[in-house]
Image 1 (cartoon, helix red, strand yellow):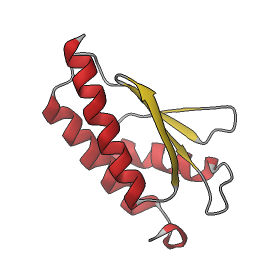
Image 2 (cartoon, one colour; image 1 turned 30 degrees about the vertical axis):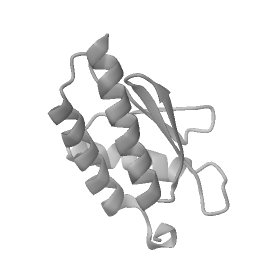
Image 3 (cartoon, rainbow, N blue to C red; image 1 turned 90 degrees about the vertical axis):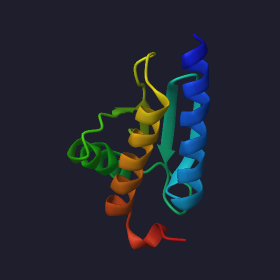
Image 4 (tube, rainbow, N blue to C red; image 1 turned 30 degrees about the horizontal axis):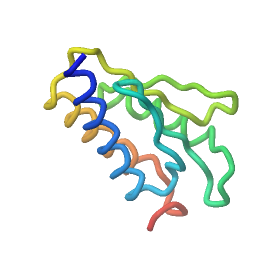
Length: 109
């Protein structure tokens, strides 16, 4: 349980840093190691197209993400409870690379 709480905090902090870098991430939320990122358009509407592109792009980075949400614009990140700090960092690096490839210039800061 202790590892799950610490790694969850690490994961959420990393996702929030990515949110600052990529405004297409409208929200980061979760509890422990069950985290989610919500994708929105510049107007703040649900962006299922980008969510699907990120989920599919992450596969090329060997990162498995789960699409969810009634509008299809949310991706869940649910690593194993035994995940290490290094593995969380690696996942965040892979997600960052995926976002850099997928996110259109319209979202750039």
